[in-house]
Image (cartoon, rainbow, N blue to C red; front, side, top):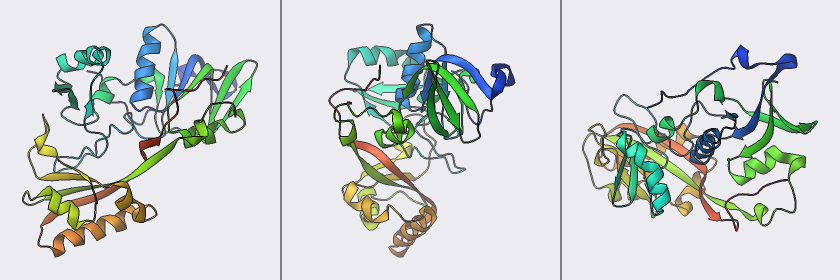
Length: 291
């Protein structure tokens, strides 16, 4: 299994003159499962790639928050597998003990981001905590400039982040002829991570927090997890909307008090907000291409 990639800096041996990073065949923005899958397929085909990610490491929604009490899979901790081709692709990770695949449901272990970490690019092909500020074109090559002023050059660009972010990044390069691209919409999700002294009724705990028709998961119920009473609650859309602008620490305090006021002993409680958790309105097709 590959070592986790996190917080890498730009290596000087990849830097060309004028502060431009060595040109690649493909520049990839985003290190979620779409970006990671593309990277593995493209490099297997012999193309040179560079992946830029604004977060500290790979994974996107396949995220895990580490904690002394055992940690939380606060993103997508499992997914359904229906395609035989996809199942065959995942079998390598099942054989390596990174993935549990039972009854058509895949769960990474011992944490929700382990599959993403196993698919991570090699060090020279990945840059974490790099926010792309602009995209330009010069002499047939695409150039990305980050917020630190460093330029990255490539022949092709693959953007795997949510559509609103992609449209902002592309700016003048956004092609108005792309069918229905501007109509893509997303459902936000508030996620609460709580460690309890004792395991209780997850539906009752979610109801106390006003989570609506939520998805509730005890971490210890998943394969390869550390013991403990760690609950992850994903609010539904209606329950999420009132908290979209609330400071996350303030939100965690409110939810902790709601549980404590009902007699529950809480050891830890944290909040996270996913603005683009699920697609509500999709395009007719998996991706859009320009030229």
